Image 1 (cartoon, rainbow, N blue to C red):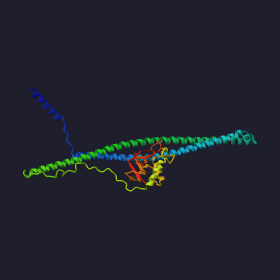
Image 2 (cartoon, rainbow, N blue to C red):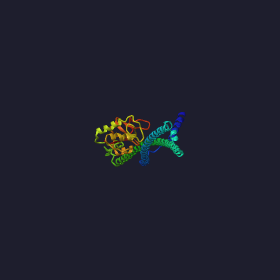
Image 3 (cartoon, rainbow, N blue to C red):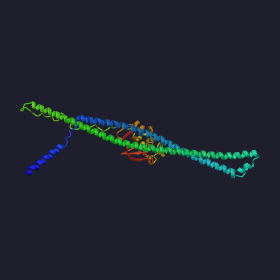
Image 4 (cartoon, helix red, strand yellow):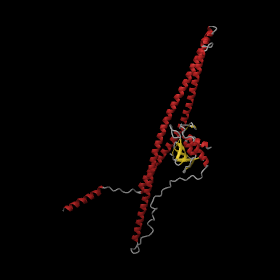
Length: 362
């Protein structure tokens, strides 16, 4: 009696569990295709947003180059104003010394030597005018120097703001890239699921057709068709598109490429300067790449986006090629390394390649 009761409890428990456990139907091919279409729509939106962001990064780079050039000019103007102020100050001291300390030509002698009151007034006015001129000139140069210094401070503040904006744009791009990659992986997975579902449906239809044909045959003549097991199969796997890019055929002049690399090496340690195009003094990323190509006798555009766009795109980078990512370029030197002018506060250096594309001019 006790055993029967126990068995009854067990049976009831199992039955309850079966009732409580939901059974989910596998998604149909149509459901999977709808999911894929939705994911592809999201990818389209993400790619459009990414394109706009890359355009903003490119425009911001051009703005930073222009602002860097303005700062360089302001620094030169400030040095010139400082020089003129010092020269004017020295000239004023010489005139004071001449008027007050030199014997017959002293300030006192100038006034005493007046022939009459009118002459005295004229001489005194002349001396006063000399003092006034000195004061005016000195004040003007001081004001000019201050104006240039204020301009330089303003430009540097604008530069810092744009650099922060550039960092934010690049961070947003990295986030978009990750989201896009995840969504593309989701689409690839859906492709696999759709293919598997199609194959499964085809297999089920084939089996149903086999069963129908077998039922129509006489039992003694019924045979299992051979060689049909894979008739509806596509190979049991998902055909994935090749991700390899066509290699650039035909190497150019390697001596020119070596000249580009050597020129880049010659600038190691030179400070990074936004808008900088002066070798040995200050260069920005595209300024370095432009200089290295100019040494090799090649004229290329000024900013990174234009440099990459105008070059021959290659998938097998060689030393001398341009390593590019949105808003930045460097000179590829081989073995996964490049020479780059990285950012404000650093010097030109050898670093690991950070690129999403390569271009060649040699």
